[in-house]
Image (cartoon, rainbow over the protein chains, first blue to last red):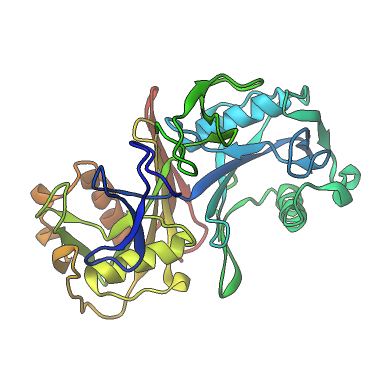
Length: 192
Length: 192
């Protein structure tokens, strides 16, 4: 971030009183211009024992399989974003009410937060949208495990199938920071 | 957002192929400049039956009581941000390990996502930081209920005390969008 997004002036790095890090300040607007971490949402949609994946038509990882996912936009709730990405990429409609909180993850290096929901659907009909080459439901045994878009999906999807099989979904809090990788499962009192 | 943050050129609104909304595109960099929703973190820190609040030294709601809270910064996990705001505003040290996921909330109108953690601490020592006029632990009966920084805190803090009393913390998912206000409690299998 080099220029003020409101007036186009060159930003200056300044250490402000009572603040621990340098900030980008616009000398013309006299305002601090913050950079916000990004929020990514994804949805684990399942029909019986099968999980919905879509094959990416865009960079990165073109041609690889992914969960329906994307960035949270302005004026959206997390659930609206998850439902939007799901229908855009796979043609499957889930409503905000269908979506159950599943994982909350932060990656400090990428300045990204991931919120994943899960939703059971009654039909396995799906159709690839413009950002996908293909959309399909997979049994665990048929899933393209060696063709996933991002390596960290492997462990996560195995975990999902374990929980699906047991009917024992938790809520997972995880993070990757300088201290390494951390995951905590909150066991729910009853199946949701 | 009117100017490109990387080159300072005037942005143009364009409808891109396969995209449902107009985007700010830089004609010079040929890149889309997205605006990201903001992530706010807060911490419910309690000692026995008492809750930690701090009195705001800054706008908005100067002089009113709030939970330790603030925006997630670049290169932070949610837990790092919650711990940083807590020590900055109240002098109370909580580690990432102490922090339990408590609420996940989105407000579509403000383009904001709130993540709240809770943490039990063994001492009620605290000291106001530069962004606070005062920091204190309050019993529910002593809490400055009519002097809270934001009206929506009222119901949330009453809920917290109810759960604290019962030793029955859940994880709460909530949102406010065009359809109104929605809240779901995930009951945990065991006290955390």
